[in-house]
Length: 353
Ligand code: G1P
Image 1: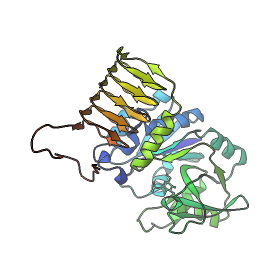
Image 2 (image 1 turned 30 degrees about the vertical axis):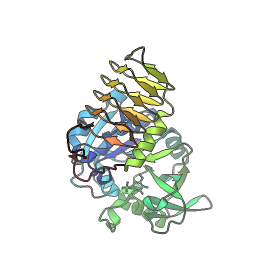
Image 3 (image 1 turned 180 degrees about the vertical axis):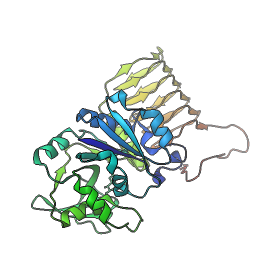
Image 4 (image 1 turned 180 degrees about the horizontal axis):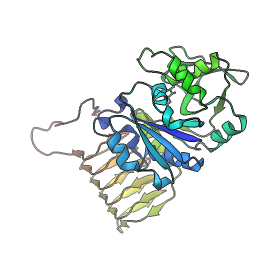
């Protein structure tokens, strides 16, 4: 059994963050999303992992390396353009060979990992196994229609979904998928869709079994989903203090303070994570906030947000439901006239009261 992790794509729905970095490397509870997937694969005792990479290949390689940190053996597979998930499978045929494999989308996060999913596949030996989760907006996903526990039809982002069961970005295949990906045609968005490839298997009477997830699942392609994933992961953290907290500060609930972080005259109400070498001074950090490394928060309030590396927030009354990028500065200015002075990246969004 091998694993194929898809870590290309342009991440258009997460611009401007993805102008400068890979969407799979945005930290959730201070750990890149992609690492959760690699951990799940290692836990399912899979060792050989192919990572399909695109424009952001150097960044992905720099953080994952040869995979030995997880006991994995990683091979990088370059995809010349984001031509679809089924295209990624097609170009990985040499790496996969005759093995069965699990395909894992690098921006997907699953609370319960993939162990039981892999076990199910190994026991039942279907040609493909799909993972499904009930969602409130099925039209944003691939959708499965089941009949008597069997997969009847799959549709990619249907206008009128036939069920609320979305295709989770984790799939298991045997070699028949290579026949399917070579037969299907590009979709309306000009991609070779994995959904169409699996539908091809169903039409050819190969066995495709469904497996419904029990724990939560998140596709972190959009800001709201990232914040939600951050909230879900923070909900289960255990408190730890590797930094310093002065006597004027108050820590409530589950808070992780990483190495060399300093909390001065502040109130931190968990669940919260404060990264290495970050300084929180005269501030309030509220529930469901992850502050990454080397960040400064001074005289401000931040809640339900993700703040990335090397950023600075000063003298700002309250920030909520926000994603602050790397090396970003948000400060109150006292210069006249009193106005918003903004320099933001392309495709950014700012909401002001
Ligand atoms: C892809 C698949 C879709 C699936 C989703 C899960 O969508 O095409 O069927 O439901 O991943 O994350 P995309 O994120 O490429 O729009």
